[in-house]
Length: 350
Length: 273
Image (tube, rainbow over all chains, first blue to last red; front, side, top):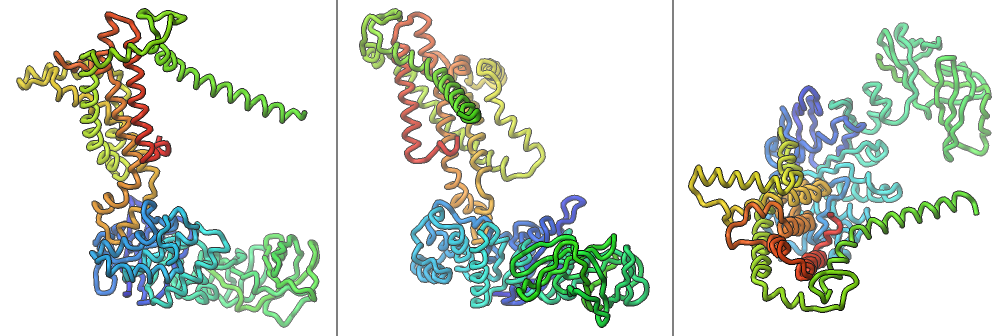
């Protein structure tokens, strides 16, 4: 395994920049997830690391090697695809053997390595099957074994769980993560699924429109989003438009005066996490912010309930509350109070 | 009975009738040819006077049919092989490559399928004449000229069918091979080729059939003493209309049908075409 460094990577297609000045340093053994909506440049970035796309400018280093212009077959990167991409005409064991064969290894040397790789993904009993005789989850584990058996310097995962059904996805997620920790694999995964990203990554990279928007831990992104896009994409936020009317004072378009920790001036959006808002029957003057409102919509999610509360003609917020038997749920039309401390809201210039 | 059930039954019957009529339309001429081949009398008329195998017995003694069959076979095999040698790389370039004029090249390669055979024959004939006059090379009526013409009609089939199977192939499988350490050539040999093999077999089969059954173009390209089977059949037909022709056709149908069944045993071409 090795450290992976991207420096100033840009990929242009005519006037369009699929990747725009990306720099990223992935430590040896670290699991980094590139997260973003489709077309954000995350797949382009992964394909640049794998060697299928040559960047217009910038460099890629893997360990001590500059691999920027090496073809994919000289990079020693293990790749797992969304579509599994197993070789359909040969057996599971032969699939796994392929990478070793390309490294001119003898049959006798290969055998124990293949068995070990298949044992890692708990499929050593299916080594003689053809890929089409396996379930989707099994096929993806074969693909993983195939990518790991030759000890790659970096493991690249391209939406590896997207084709699996929800239940299986959770299992394979844990399996990949445990394997990655055990083998101390430097790993880069691409996904558009934020839950997947949050549960698997050591560090996350949020991308949009070809650029890195924020790099950080789960807490960094969730508690301290650097911009409106991140606050919206990671977790859930209700946005209230308005402007800063002096330090720590936000006035919404609908006239609500909100205490917050922002310092800027001019047009601003205030982002509020639904689960960080308190729902109360009576006003609570002790809180920094407390507004009365009307419940307009209720989403019953089982363990939680989302309430859409109108605070002013122009503002409606979502409040998420725990569903507890001792606390009766409000009904549509009920008058309630919504409160939050000034550290809860994040402000972003708009 | 509710209205929607009865309308479904009517719909299903209409579909079956239409399918049955289409199938009959395709099979009826073949049925008559096969039936005719077993008529006893020399002049085909209905109802037959009786049935006989004598027309089949006459074929091996007819030099024109035998040599025609052998020539057609040779030409078809060679032309198909060359057609594949051109078609496989061409299809790979057309599907995987990104270059200007890709669409134009694709259309040029499919052109021989669109141009009527007789026009193709005349064009090649004139081309051969002119080339022979200019260069002095004996092209006109040569075996090489005949095969070159047949390569032309095999190419659209090989390119089309191999293109189709390449398009249907998951690109990620090739990329997986490359990431595992296989260079382009190894990837093609170990991954792409096995994946498109059914397409290649189908391409060979259709190229062969197109060449083997070709009449119009071949008419202009054959030389003295060199007659393909379809031409031998036509020439025989100019003087006689006894059931020998039908018997030869039956053998030809059996030959091609047999080739298809045999290939299908090894490669499921039904998945490609």
